[in-house]
Image 1 (cartoon, helix red, strand yellow):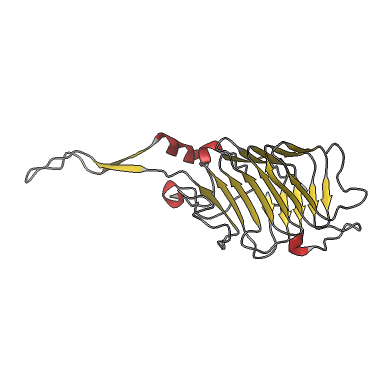
Image 2: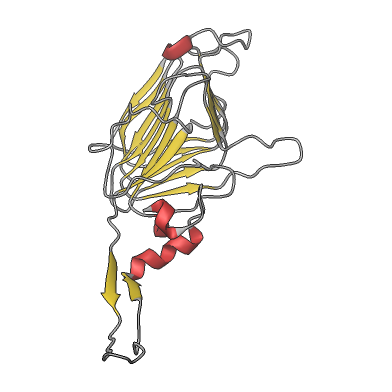
Amino acid sequence: FKGDVGASKVINNLTVVTTGDVTAAKTVHTQEAFVVKQAKDISVGGMIYAGYNDAGKKTAGEKGQVSLEAVGENTTNGIDAAGKVNLVSTAANGKITMNGKIKTDSKAADAVVLDAKGSFANKTKNTLTDTTAAITTGEGGSWKVYSVAPYSDTFGDNLLSNTNAIWHATSAEYARTTAEASGGRYIFAYQPTITITANDASKRYGETSSGAGVRYATDSDLSSFTAFTDGANTLSARL
């Protein structure tokens, strides 16, 4: 798609099923759903508006959904939807990239789901006139971001879940429909490990102990936690 899709006359539903690339250079407008299935890579250069009529008013409710499923790269430049937003990348080296913010009126527990079997990147920025979070839902709705591990992700500073991440789980183990009291959550497939080793120590009656305490050691990937700031910024709080 080289131009604006549905700009002069809003398309009712737009569904694309292909094993090739799907590229939209500019905006996409649909009165109800915008769906892409089985694509190799997806790239949308402009905003996606789903659930808007020709008068520019949201009328579709949950029918105004966006569901974009790619094998590799899945890149969007902003989404404003009446219904749920579902972005998927199924390859281990695939990536979901947000170059623009996502907004939905959906109040569902799975109002926004970004399910990357590879990595995730939030490249949105706040401005003096826009201080909203990178993802916003309707009242009571929640978002979920699935990826392999935080060391491969780019979080930005405007998408805080303010709760503990879930580890060693994918969307198959931690359901998309799980309600989130804080409004959102990160879920990582990676399982971190911590090794606790007691320090060598000796003591005879009447003497002071030669040592005490324990040593903590982690696998190399756990060092990436220093760059993963979300909610309580302590290692123990995030495990």
